[in-house]
Length: 323
Image 1: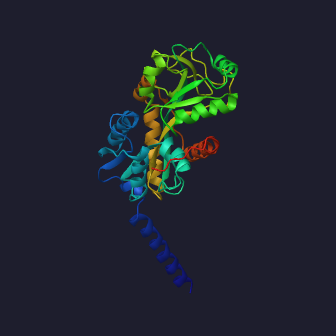
Image 2 (image 1 turned 90 degrees about the vertical axis):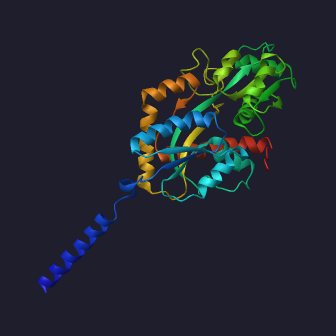
Image 3 (image 1 turned 90 degrees about the horizontal axis):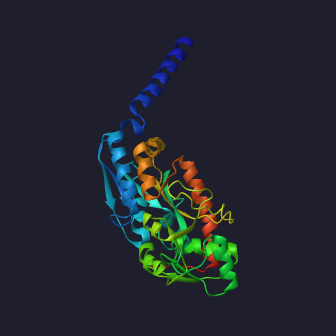
């Protein structure tokens, strides 16, 4: 009996060994062909500026091409939907932004996906903070002066933003709520289209995601807790006396739902390595991005925090999108 038990034990151990040897982890064999990085915005925009250098870095590290594919439409929803339905094999990933992942589903529940259920979070990549810009004829030289003027001139403050439901629009509403002021909100097609009216003095202030173009205007504050390196001398909202009035547009890497954990871990590792590189750091300072990085769990936490903040702003502002 003892010899039979010993024989059975050896057979079982051999079977277990064969299972582990015969089925290596996905990351050990992946990738064996090109990877597609979907960017759900138009060519030449911020998504491309961020995504293409990251794709080159990952491609060199993995020894396989990472093909960038722009799939614009629906404010990022078209590309997001396509990725949510892709095979979870690591060959389709996407650079998404806070707009399609957090803001759009709140404003349009019929958008067609659930950011928590229909994607695998990989890593935060970068964020672009929003800035408060003073118009050429507006007398305020600080956020506090802006608020004081608005309270002394109720109903007169004109506020430009890059369009309904954009982060710039929501950031302006958040500022007004926290400061107790009233604004007349003027929507533009983009932050770029807003600039001529701001520089010409047709509007009092503008709120938009920072771009180097904004240095031609008077920047009253950057909507972050701490100052940023690429805007020396510009106060943060905490320094300006309005802690908690923070707004930024982040970009993050996602995959389809149920991606293998080891592939997620490998892509997370490569993304963080890229963000730490001197090349990436120099580029980000020039164009106004802040490197984020971190674990998939940190991305999930950021999504939850932003959803809590902006769902209230959207509800209070009665903002709905149905297209």
